Image 1 (cartoon, rainbow, N blue to C red):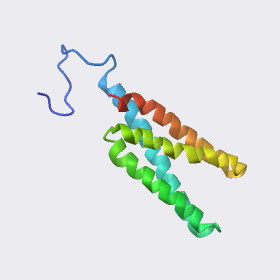
Image 2: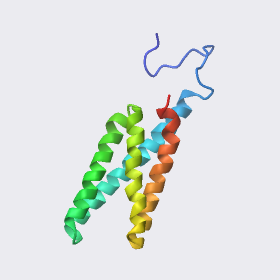
Image 3: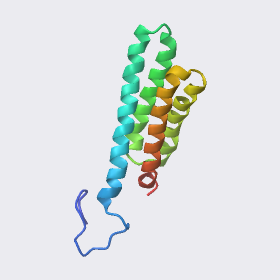
Image 4: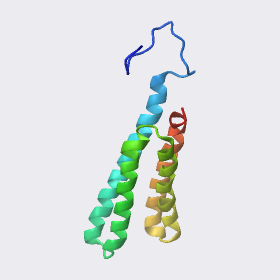
Length: 128
């Protein structure tokens, strides 16, 4: 039995047509991007609570960001399939903001689009 992180002997058959490192990178890089976007969004919404006139609105966004961060850091990283599906709930409000405010909506839509692209890239790793 191999220890975690050890490679199979060079003559051993691989279960996938792609090397494990390629599959891991297709999960790790998008995961870090999503964690980064969520963290920056949380910090931004926290700062807006004190500077913009609607603290309750930004408190809601901050709570939403912290929940998304908790899902990403624990169950998503464990490759739990439900976390992948739940993470799509982060994309929907970000993309929907453009319908209500075109000035800031573009920024939110771009964040949502990047997050959605990362989710699509991680799909294969989450489904194995």
